[in-house]
Length: 114
Image (tube, rainbow, N blue to C red):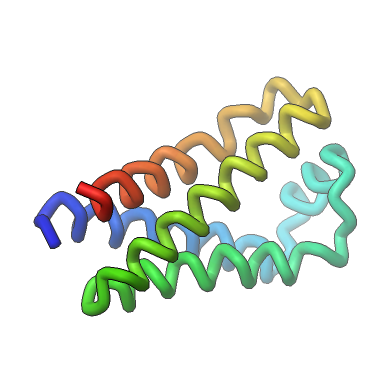
């Protein structure tokens, strides 16, 4: 695995884990945004779990590249769907929120495939 792949994977993992932590503590701003997007509040633990699994998978994947590839692909799908959810809700001012996470996931995936 290249140095770039390691750095980007670690950054993507940390970002996903921080995002999962924010969901776990159920920050008011997250709950408010989710309500605006039409996402039920009781989905937050599952969404947090998906982000955490992606983050942990990227970290463990540093030692097992197939796992890193799967985690990067799963994280990419997750954040594409997060962006689609924001767009579907027409919350245009929030479109930028999932983009950094998506960019990191896509970069990690691209570097795993390189």
